[in-house]
Image 1 (tube, rainbow, N blue to C red):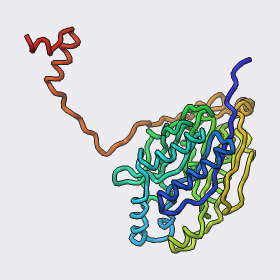
Image 2 (cartoon, rainbow, N blue to C red):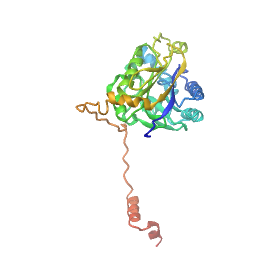
Image 3 (cartoon, rainbow, N blue to C red):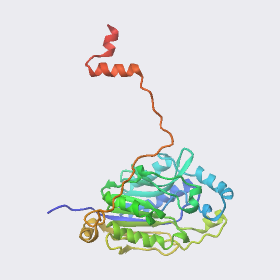
Image 4 (spheres, rainbow, N blue to C red):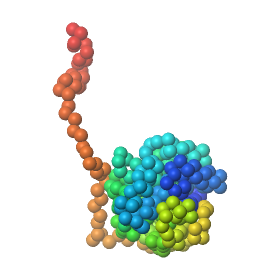
Length: 330
């Protein structure tokens, strides 16, 4: 009979965070996971930095004026692991769904734009940090490295993700495809700058990478605009689910500014036919072009511990069949 690839139901969330409110945003995320789970979703994708929102001020005001907002964001960001991630994991477990959610990750004194992956049991299986903050975001977020750029083997297929402007780069997507990605979460913020990039890039990604794309984008609501105190162009929401290989829209998009969830039944068996037309990391890959990818974690501090000579001697005695404790007793 041959192999049968996974079939599952995907959900793409389009919603506004509870801006700069970690607990409120987590509560809303869990409610959206519940809604999608009760509707049979096996995979739920929530927008970029949904907890607790995007640093829009960095795009609309100077550094010094925005520092108060940046400090508030820092104090409402998410440690991994933490009570907040446990709450999201509990929602994933309760409704038996994989979850990919955007967070502002706090690591020591730095923030990162991060996607967090949960399995059906509510365990964190990985994260992806945005490689390069875009535009004014450089004033707020640090840069990711290759150690969080992975594809995860799951019950719904080999799952990967990119964040917003990363979809305009050729190599992050190519490397995920070369790792065998079958299902891709495209996570976006929602304001005018990224419109119509979210649609164009997400549909192209589905074609070029032979990957089903779950495109989830956030909403800029009145509460956010009032909080920041500047006019933000809001015509930038486009959440949909896209067919691998063809770029055909399977579900969505929702209307601009509308909150909701779109669903689609995904059958990985259906895309196999497309592999024989343009599998760009396999037989349709021009071998004159190769990518060398640095998957190391890049740290600011590496501590080398000098071995204890006594412990080294003890280890040699054990390897030689001598019990050092018995020798001392004699």
